[in-house]
Image (cartoon, each protein chain N blue to C red):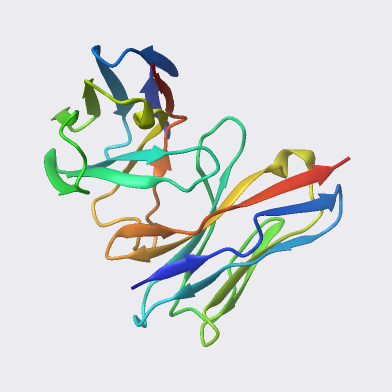
Length: 117
Length: 112
């Protein structure tokens, strides 16, 4: 199984809603990532978890709250979002130390397209 | 600061022809990795090819190959025998301290 599965594929939420994005992988990867991608732009790194601990937070607003309950699962909890937060949210996983390294690469999910009204 | 530049916002090619996408980068490091990722309309980011800077030999993956010019800090992607399924956004990326620095992307259109 070389897949990263993200649910839901699409999400529409109001600014007062609370929702969660889910990401799952069963490749034994111990690093998991959240990226935000606006249309026709490259992905922007938000968070990195290594061995289930938050290792990188790219100054993301607190209305985004990541969680890594186990080595296979990564969540992104959303609360009081703004319309400018509408974007594609991509999850990725890798061996720790990737994406560099001789045989390492990032595996991406297909993303959750989020619309904030 | 490390940067990646893709100067072609959009490219088009006739099916079965060859196309080259350009990428330049700036770094003071001597050992690093470079990547080309493809993002089709399905939105999933897919690794196309990877180049290790300490290897002089250009990486190839089937119809995809790179022209890596370390001194010029250039990393172009050549797609041979273009197919309709190659239509996508292509992103060049540089590995900096285990994080990816991305270029702005090139949209590739395949004309049937």
